Structure formats: C-alpha cells, structure tokens
Amino acid sequence: MTTIYLVRHGRTEWNQAGRLQGAHGDSPLLAESYQQIKQLATYLRPIDFARAFVSPIKRAQDTARLTLADMQVSIPLTTLVDLREFEMGIWEGLTYEEAKANHPAMFAAYRTAPQKFVAQEVPGAESFQGLQDRVRGAIQTQVQRYGGHDVNLLFFSHGMALTAGINGLLGQSIDHLRDAGGLGNTSTTVLKTNDGRHYDLVVRNDTHYLTDVKQGNDNF
Image 1 (cartoon, rainbow, N blue to C red):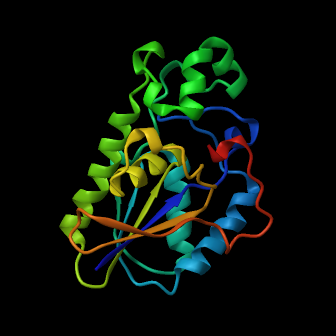
Image 2: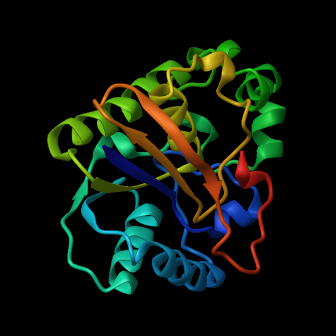
C-alpha cells in the first residue's frame, strides 16, 4: 500500500488580494503562513516519508522546504515541473473581478462548469483536461517509481492543480471537478493505492491542525 499526502502551498499576498496566480504569476507567503507551515510540519512529523516532490513555483518551493526543515527530517525533495499550477494565460495577475469582466463566460465556466471552459478563449491558458492529465501523470509516475509496501510519499503543489489531480486519480471526469469544493492553503489530502493506478480517498482538504485559518476566494 502506497499512501500519498498532497499539500497545497501556504497562503500568499495574491491569495489574500483575490488575484489569480497561475503557473507564471507568484507572490510571497503571508506572515501567518509561516506559523501554519510549522503546524503542518508538526502534523506530518510522525509519518515516515520515503520521498517528497514539489512544484517549481516559489510559493510551493518555500512551503515544501520550510515544512521539511520544521519536520527535522532529511528526505529527498524533487522538483517536478508538471506539479505547477493551472496555466491561466492572460488572467495571471488579474483580480477575480478583472478576469470576470474581461471574459465573463469563460470565467463562469472556470468557477462553476470546467467542462465548458475553452482554453483558446483565454490566450495562454491550458484546458482543464490537460491540467488533470499532467498532474495525475506526474503523481502516478512517482508512485510507480517509488511506491511499495507501507510507503508514504509527500507532494507540494497548488489549489487548482491538486483539485484536478485528485479528481483524475479518483477516476472522476472534468464535469465533477468542482463538486467537492476547493482546497485550503496548507491543507492536506491523503489517498491510498495498492497498484499505482486505482486510488481511494482517505481525507480531503484536512486543516484540523491549523489555527487562525483565514480563507477566501482562494479556496477555489
């Protein structure tokens, strides 16, 4: 049995401002996130992880490195480009309201009906199916490479990337991507697999270890 722990990065300045970061936008972690990362590390510390993996984007890199340091463990940390956030093209850096004003139909699809989102309508964006396929593939590749009997693997990524990846690992279609809602910053989702192809959900969007959690539109 391989168990995978999927962590969303700590809350950032753009999360707080309701600004879309995507795969190429980025902003610093908020001061509150450093304390929450310590709480995450306390939660994860008793678990024996074989390896850890992280998106190349700084907010995820910072979350991963700080978490591992606070866990006081030395485990290999590998950057995987396919764990990056959703490619949002010209929306990156815009507020939710600005993106909505510029592309009302596509923004509505992005928020509530991902199966209707047409990437070509937002220059530089990727499709939800493409996102799901690359994140699921990145995780499955590492599970097949390093998984095994009683192996735990740790992944650090982003809200939409993880939502799509989890959806794909559970064998669900893009139509149901939004059914379970978003993932909070510094949250943990846990899945198990016996064969690296079929996954069972243990817990989704777990934040019980956090105090003073402030989440807004960045949950989605």
